[in-house]
Length: 123
Image (cartoon, rainbow, N blue to C red; front, side, top):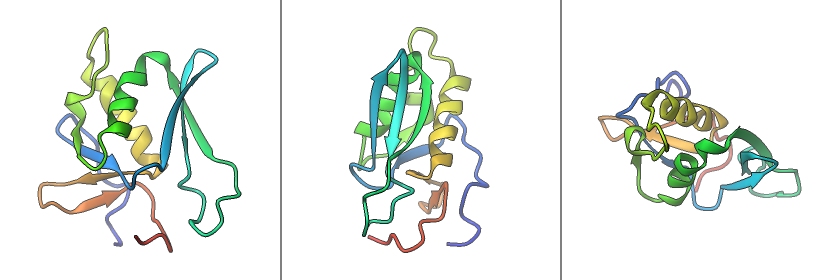
């Protein structure tokens, strides 16, 4: 779907979910929250190393909520982020994960928007 990739701006009302179950995993290591995902791997050969992106430990509850919600969508404003519940931080987390390509956004017209093109990865 050309024109329906990362040009979308994430905000507090944005609804996101993972592209498919099991595509990403949250691991707490060395004092940070690291998300490992398989978006860079073609489904036919899973031999490549998993891509990862790191976040401060405080971001873990928000990330976990997004990963565990599948197949449901989660509004960015509803992500837990103790102790401050800062909306700007939630938007930053959601934007970073969306840009990794394993989250989709549903817009007001119920169209799904992806952070990266998924060539040859149709369900």
